[in-house]
Amino acid sequence: MPGFDGTAYQARLDALAAAGQAMHGEADLVSAYRPSTVLDAGCGTGRVALELARRGLEVVGVDYDQSMMSEGRRQSVGVAGVTWVEADLSGLRLGRLFDVVVLAGNVPLFCPPGNRPALVESCAAHVAPAGVLIAGFALDGRYELSAWDDGCTAAGLILEERWSTWDRQPFSGARGDYAVSVHRRPGPA
Image (cartoon, rainbow, N blue to C red; front, side):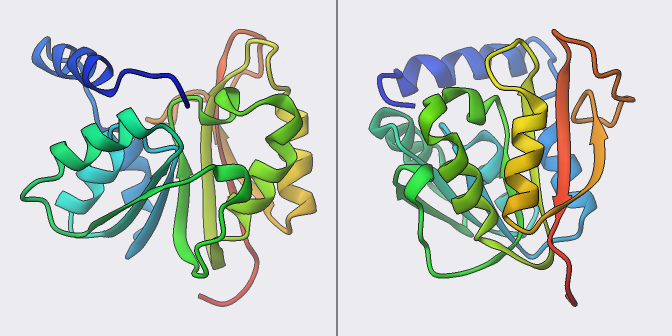
C-alpha cells in the first residue's frame, strides 16, 4: 500500500472506535481457529495484529507502506508478541509457517493486478499444514472471486468456508458484496 498516510489512517480508525464501531471482527474470526501464530499480511497500522497479540498470539505484521508500518510500530509500544516486517507481499519469503495467514481490509485489491497470482502464492506458502488463509475483500469488479479461488487452489489450498462479513453473515455472492473466504491447507496439524 505505498503512498498512504499511516497517521491519518490510524486517526480514522480511532474515530470509528470512539464512535462505538466494532473494530475487531477480523481478530474474532481469526481467534475462532485457535491459532498460536498468525501472519497479518497487509497489516497496515496493525489494528488486527495488535488485537491478536493482546489476545496472546504470536503475530507477524507485514506491509509494504513505510508510513503504515511506522504507525503500527508506534501503536505497538507496550504490546508483546508482534514482529513488524516491511515487505512486498507478492514476493514475501519469511522462511516459516503460520497457523493462520489473514488478509483483512481489501488487501488483494491494493495489489497490482499483474502481481495478484504471486500475492496468493506467497501468502499461501506461509500457511502451515492444516492451517488456513483468510481473506476479505469487496466484490466490486476489481478482482474476481473466482480468480482468488483459482490462485488458492493452485497453491494447494481448499475452500472451506465463505461469508459476506467478518462476523460470519451468509454469503450472497452478489456483485458489490464482500467476501470473507477461508481456504485450508490439507495435512495434520
